[in-house]
Structure formats: C-alpha cells, structure tokens
Image (cartoon, rainbow, N blue to C red; front, side):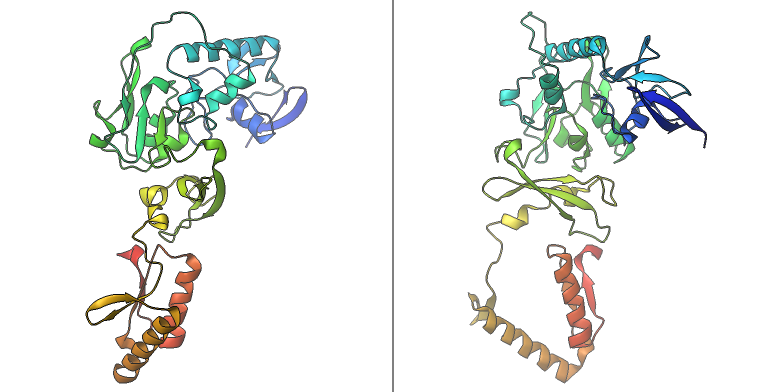
Amino acid sequence: MEKITLTIDGKEVTGIAGQTIMEVARENGFHIPHLCYHPKLSKTGACRLCIVRINNTMLKASCTEPVVSDMKVITEDEGIKSIRKWLLGLILMEGDHNCLYCDADGDCQLQAYVKTYEVEQSKEDFPVIEREIDYITSNAIKRNENRCILCGRCVRACKEIQVSNVWGLCERGSSTHLIADDDKKIGESTCVKCGTCVQYCPTGALTFQPVLGKGPNWELKKESSICIYCGVGCKIDFYTNKEGLLVKTMGHEDGPNDGHLCVKGRFGFDFVQSPKRLTKPLIKKEGQFQEVGWNEALDFVAQKLSAAKEQFGPDSIAGLSSAKCTNEENYVMQKFMRSVIGTNNIDHCARL
C-alpha cells in the first residue's frame, strides 16, 4: 500500500492512498466536525460541516476528499468557523430543533455543535413544512421528521449494516423527506426493530420508545457488558436511570458485533424489572405453587434428581439453560450436568 505524507494543522502525518482527509485526521487524533459522516457507513459529503482548507486556498469536504502527497490541511480557521456557524444556522431554520422538549436533549450531535459554535436560532419567519410525528405504530422506535436533517445516516445504516432497506429519501429540494418502504408508518413497514437507525441518528429524529419519559439523557448511567442471548458475544452499553431502572441499550463499537445489535439484544431487557419475574422459589404442594425458602427448594431438587439418577441412570436427566441468565450461570449449569449428574444432556434456549 502506497504511503502518503501530508500536513494537518502544521503536524506531519502519514496516510494510505485511497484514504480521505477525515479518515487520516481521525487516525491521528484530529476532530473534524461532521453530521452525515460515520466511519462505518459509506460517504456522501451531504452536510458540508466537515469542510477543511487545502493548501491555504480551496475548501473541500474532508469526508470525501482523498489525501495526496504534500497536501497541507487546515481543519479550522476563522473563515471555516464562520461557514460552519452559517451551515448550522441553516439546519436550525429548517425544522423543529428546540432542545428543551427534544427526546435527544443531552445526546445530540447537532446540539453539541450548535453550542460549540454559539449558533442562535434565527428570528426570521422561515417557512417550515410540518412533518409527521409517529410514536404510536411502533413500540420500538419514535419518528419525528421535524428534527430530521436529511443526513442519510439511517438510510445507509439500514441498507449497509442491517440490510433491510426500509428507510429512504423521497422528493426533491425543500420537499425532501424520510420515508419507510413506500411511505408507510414504521409499525406498518418491513422494519425489524433492530434499532440500528436510531443508534446512527445524530439528532432527535429517531429515538427509542422504551427510554422516553424514563429520565433525561445526562442522568443516565452507562455500564458495558456482554449480550446474554446467544454465543456471538456482542458487547452492549446498558443505560440505567436515577431509579436504577434499565431503560436503554446501545451496541458497543469495540465488540465483535462492531456496534450492531439484533432486536433481542436491543430491546430484550424488560424482563429484568418485570413485575412477573419470580424472586422466590416455588414448590407445588397439594396442586398449588407455594413460596418456600432456598434451603428447602434446593433439598427438594437434590432429592428428586438423586432419585431419578439412581433409578433410571444419569442420561434420564436433561438440563435446559436460559439466555436470561448470565454467561457464568450458564457455565455452572453445564458443569453441574456433566460433573455432578454425569450426562451430556444439556442445552440452551438460544438453539431452539
């Protein structure tokens, strides 16, 4: 691979032929503002927020411009700041971007850049097309097109990562807007509720339904773990609110899933705090389940298993483990079946 040497903000760096300025800058610790760009998606150069100055003259979109030898790149100067501020102002004018009542308040890339560049909402009477807010048809995703900035991230994520091809853009000019399938509501479309589009959305246009009303984004506490549902080992960021309730999950970029989750990994956490969840052992007595202590329950199970093993042999017993237990608990279960019971009749619900 051909190595290319260039200068970014006065620092000499090395890239590879075919890389863009954005990619080389990110690898060397330079942050260039962007909204439509994401390292895991194809490049479009739509938002123009990532413009940089090349060789002290021309302005180019860094997410699509390839690097060349001896290129001199300036990621930000007064002129670029002014243009970015102007671009952000235009985005705010075309849509409903009032952070005070937005679901993405505190977790929005657009909001972060607006604060960085001190952009104020325009007082001009700019005609805005009122778009659809759909929070009824899907119990997974809320859609508010009034906050859509047409970055196309959701469209590319749905096509290139999930390969469902649900989202698309239709019409032209100021009438351009997001559609699901042939302009259906989310719950009526072919959406599989994987939530990938929400994870890649940089604004509040697409948000997760389960987290709404459970606490503001800045109060949520994040902890990373491994998904319990299958053997892939996807890494997940779990978010809990001030009351300790699990309200949201996001795919972790460093996991084997590369940040992508299936519908179970994304939304299958409600059992944790379900009121139907058993918290004490039950034994059926006189035809009715009754709560008992752990010692009584364990003695009862040990007695029944020992009797079955003695009368019919260890292979008369089988164990089925659960994806709603931890990996460690599942390991102990198979160890118990093989070492204590003496059978390989052990399986897991993920294979059913």
